[in-house]
Image 1 (cartoon, one colour):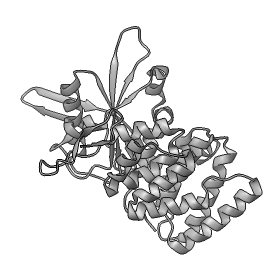
Image 2: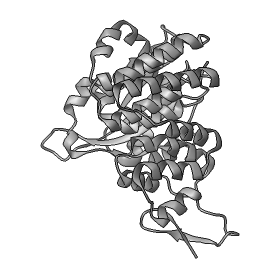
Image 3: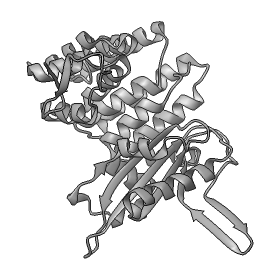
Length: 334
């Protein structure tokens, strides 16, 4: 009853709802950020910075550049870590990451941690070391997902999309081993998406998170689909069509470019040749990510931005057929 990896869905919702994430978990920091100015994800830079520095398995980490509401031109890099298991050396690793990010950009770095594990007593908040009169103290902001169990009613009434993310993750922990209970709770959470007044793009993104985190075996999954179709007919609306649901599942299982292209055409119509070529050349894991991410796209420009953020790997010298990339990040053949 447990999906083996929460990494992809958390990355997706952080990309979609970063503003909402900061507002719910770290409201004081959120209030100091100049949101109209925008923000920039620097995940590829983070991968380079943390290469060789990892202690244990990372769950999710994100690097985001934001600007503060100050008169000066000040840029702050926010390092977000979502940690799903208790880890020896966790505090040291965060300290190393924080310093490496500072060393790379020479800008202030704020670290925010979300602890999604089930150990009530594990609440790391700082790294402290002292030797021969030299002391280093690294303190960071952390939030424990388990604490939100006591705030369920607040989450239920919230119009923040990340309230649903928290509810879904806690529900996944509580319903392991009980498929029937998980089915009923997933139905409740899914039906509430429209009642909360979320827009279509937000609903699509949250639907995919619920679909992944509150995974159901085939028989219960089919029952869920049937009950959702009944609900959609009653409400004269739909969250995700049956065809799209099958496409999501098949796309995840097979990483099929054909399935992903079909999903995109159903939503946005014909695609340009460069985008199709890029998608056809994506590796299986990237296709699986795209099959989930595309339901958060509002237009083809979102697809183009995603493709730019996920360029194709450079071929080895023995494969000269690919000579470069077009301006939109797609493959250009020789």
